[in-house]
Image (spheres, rainbow, N blue to C red):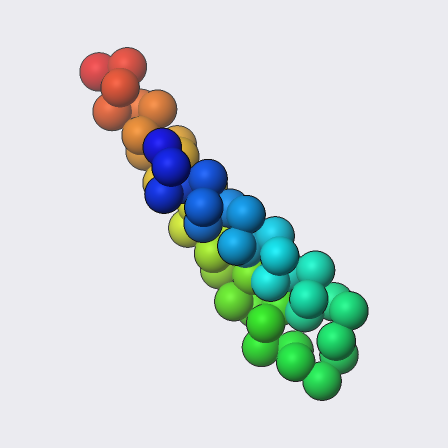
Amino acid sequence: MGIVIALIVVGIVLLVLGIAVKAAMFLLWIGIILLVVGAVMGVMRQVRNKA
């Protein structure tokens, strides 16, 4: 669970930095990708724990 939270926090930080610094647009995409990966991992973990 710690890795999922860490990915989400890093994703949010990179997302905020990407919005704040327009020159670093790639940070925005990395933040979005990390948020999606973190969300998918969280859902997969919940589904696996219920089964």
